[in-house]
Amino acid sequence: MVGMVDWRLFEPLFNWARKKSLWIVAFCTGCGGIEMPPLMTARYDIERFGMLSDPSPRQYDLFLITGYVTPKTLKRIIITYELSPDPKYVLAHGSCPINGGVYWDSYNTVKHLDKYIPVDVFIAGCMPRPEAVMDGIYKLMDMIESGEADGWRRYKENYEWYKKNQDELLGEGWREKEARKWIPWLVDKTREVKK
Ligand code: SF4
Image 1 (tube, rainbow, N blue to C red):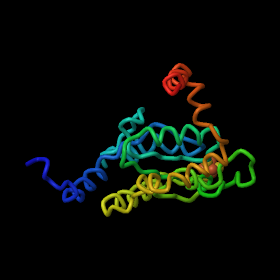
Image 2 (spheres, rainbow, N blue to C red; image 1 turned 30 degrees about the vertical axis):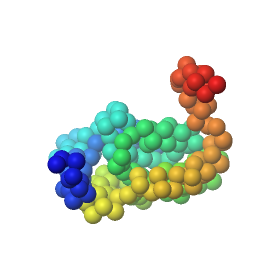
Image 3 (cartoon, protein in one colour; image 1 turned 180 degrees about the horizontal axis):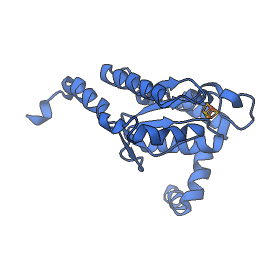
Image 4 (tube, rainbow, N blue to C red; image 1 turned 120 degrees about the vertical axis):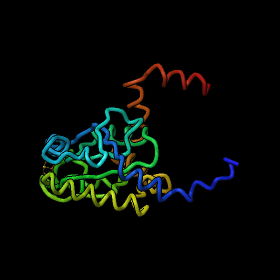
């Protein structure tokens, strides 16, 4: 009988639980990382909303991009994002991830983060205060409950488009080069198996 349950009926309940138990991957970029301690500690205390910081991509479901992103950091962001289970949400704060911000003409800053990974909520400002970040979190929670926070699904559906943008910026074969840096024995083993 258990196999006949249509779990989609429980989706509103799951979404309610997801919004009340967001775990943030401990990964900060740019200047906005400094807004995290006041958010996590007594002043704003986001733990009261069930939010925790987690060091592993295996459990998190909220990725905060806290400022400017360089191509080198973008590689880590994409890999971390892809490693984590669905559903997952991205909240980017600061003008830099939106359009480059004060680094708009820098050769080494990613201008439109949402060309490379899907962003559910952007918070403008340089840098946004913790109140603005809280506001963005409330907005994201509402979107999760209503099912609108679907960036993770868009990433799968439009994967070729994201991959094309990633390859244009980071160069073809960048994933393999990164993998070779960190786990050369695994890359070599995969090659052997393919042969
Ligand atoms: S928006 Fe401002 S505070 Fe945020 S990363 Fe860019 S320069 Fe730094």
